[in-house]
View 1 (cartoon, rainbow, N blue to C red):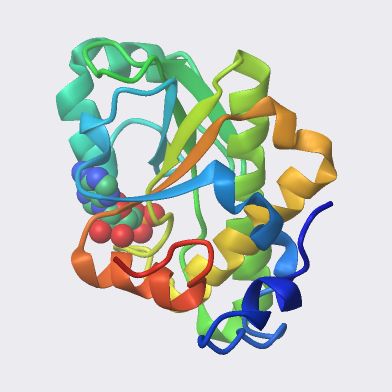
View 2 (view 1 turned 180 degrees about the vertical axis):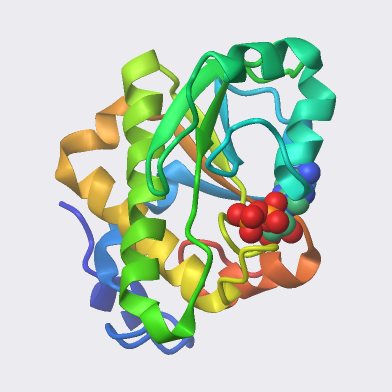
Length: 205
Ligand code: ADP
């Protein structure tokens, strides 16, 4: 039986987050999730997700790091893809990366005046990336914190939506399609934020 959020917290001294803060869908799938603090390009897994821009022709931040580590053949393949809509995802090979595939997705540029639209697009970016992973048979996938760099999405809000959307996708009959979903944080601060948001999923070390 899948434990409920309440039962997971019952024997804990940690207060359960309120449902409005974090939907419970992620908790039954804690065993499929990991946090990693560091550079996503170093991960030797089936697929890493790139927080790209609409052109898919490279940029700064994690996108720049992925293109540098993968080598120029990645850009060559990206040129054949005709860009990518915000919230969608497209897959290439990993070239010189230790990861087999790169799933390029485009998160929204955050606008607080259009929070709901931004959240919808961020959730789509996570969901469509997972669908791409499923399509290409990638069973281990790492995500950077999409949109939380130059695209300005507040980290807490982005992390909450990411956890909830991943949970919904797994709950939708997809938990057999993946072995591990890694949330890759580039700073200790971001890493600590996840352990605060979901302490039974990512117990503080
Ligand atoms: P966006 O345009 O979607 O905001 P950014 O690349 O600016 O994309 O930032 C997205 C997140 O990726 C940020 O949290 C940033 O700290 C993180 N990041 C940057 N470089 C790396 C890297 N090499 N590995 C993992 N995460 C990274």
